[in-house]
Image 1 (cartoon, rainbow, N blue to C red):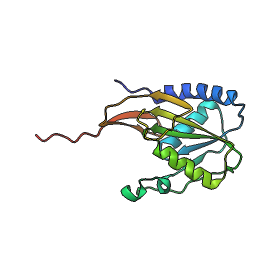
Image 2: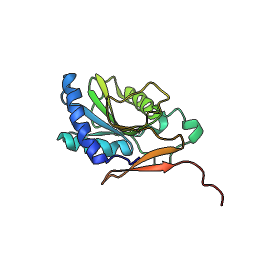
Image 3: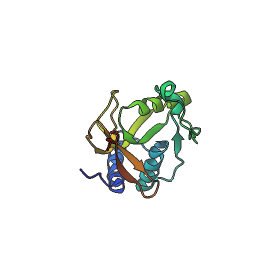
Image 4: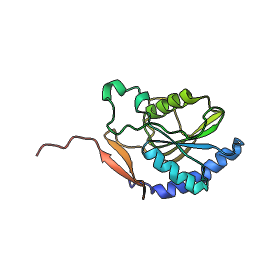
Length: 172
């Protein structure tokens, strides 16, 4: 199975997001990308939408429920939200949705900043491997992978999807 082209996915996601926002009568949403891949996708999506407003970034490292098991990633940076969250319609963007735990962490962090009017979840790829009842409102592609496979987004330009094999290499 070949992986889809992220640029094509983003173009379709822009069409789908416009339709979603119109159905909900939302204008002027605030975009927030989850570091790092979600930020890249949010930037590409905003460009495809023709939206030049300030974008927020979240680093959810301290909000993850596996923080005590995995420790702190060495590249943790502070979240940056150049706008109020309270009462805003937010478009939360991530690259790959797997278990749902990153999104749960992102929602927890967002609510520490205030109570948004709504949160629309947009993901480039949904691996359909959810451990939590979290589904994107807009998704580029849904993929079913083997248990020992993952997908990683590289970028920021150009965006590309890479398949990763987590199976240990067999001894020769």
